Figure 1 (tube, helix red, strand yellow):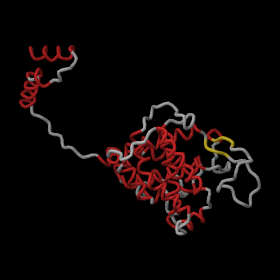
Figure 2 (cartoon, helix red, strand yellow):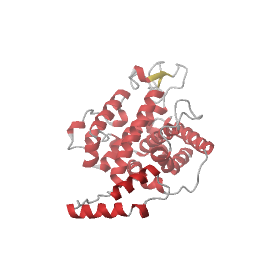
Figure 3 (cartoon, helix red, strand yellow):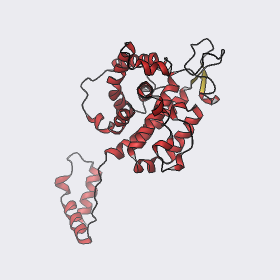
Figure 4 (tube, helix red, strand yellow):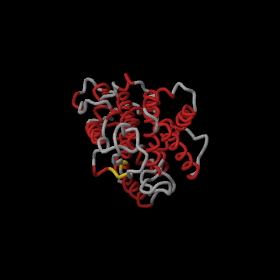
Length: 301
């Protein structure tokens, strides 16, 4: 599932250009997001051991996973390319616009898809050093990405951002996989309530009230503790950062190298003369009069 999610990010440019078979209205999209989010919460509420077992059980939880998988490509395209980043907050959730909401659904979906199908031996290898073993500059945390606290995830993301252009040129596929892991961890943190040891930045968390249902981050043997949820400001920052990194990576992956040939002095002069003399025939008929006047002035010279 990790590789599937990585391919979705890398191929998002082409996928977003494919005409949608089912154009959704704003209300339909809102309903879809709510449905997927409810499925995600239902799955993530299970302990990780039960998650792995449920994948082979053929029970209702497998149907929830199927629903998430069937819609993930559409939501990725909406998040990365189609939703307007500058739109005001929508009626679906205050202080989040459509891009933020789609990004949240993508990250939470990645958390389900990666955690649900990933066995412990694979999860233990989800370290920065495993993705870029020959690039020690970004080996800033020895822990596996699915085990990072909030502050550690921020630290890892900051180091990736600083070297992102170099990492993309080094290994684009590894970039996609490590980004999916970070998005998955963020999605898990954003979906659940956690103790202060996990959401350890006091400025980027809100109290979830002591009476709330305890999350998987709280052990059964522990007494009552204060539970926290990630702040909306922190959520917006992560979603926007992921968006910029995905776009740069996807454009690089989908781009084609173009060889440039410089014109000689004579060829350049001849080409320029021909273009200027043909301006009255090639220019659009509705071009601005001031621009057209400039072309005619150049031609007269």
